[in-house]
Image 1 (cartoon, one colour):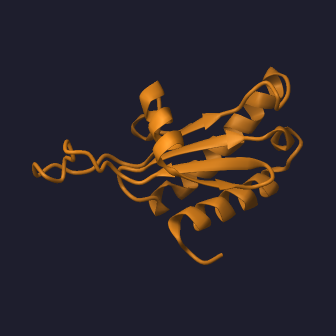
Image 2 (cartoon, helix red, strand yellow):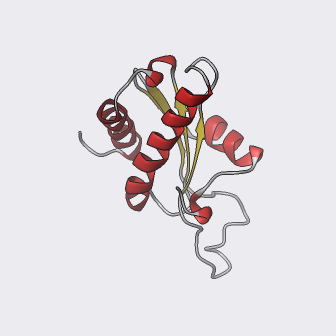
Image 3 (cartoon, helix red, strand yellow):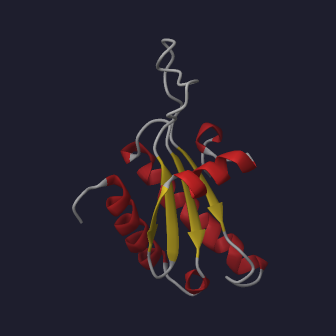
Length: 125
């Protein structure tokens, strides 16, 4: 389970990550990353600290039945939990599973997620 402070819950946060963030597509998933808040209500300006990185997941019915969708969500939550430390503070991440993700193994999902995050964060693979 993802800790409460690291979960995306509001529709506006999902929309911000998808519309204003960068995107990296892989065969099994698409990752959207919005780095920090660049608005005037930036907590760094008033002496506050940025909130921790937060992640959300989109797994549609195209993936499969409820059992398969929940399995994919559990795998993705586990994978992103291990990678939260490498994400910038205040960033929003949305991971959207593509239809092949239902048949993919844990290792295949991990490989696609790592490649997408490396591309978005500017690190070399």
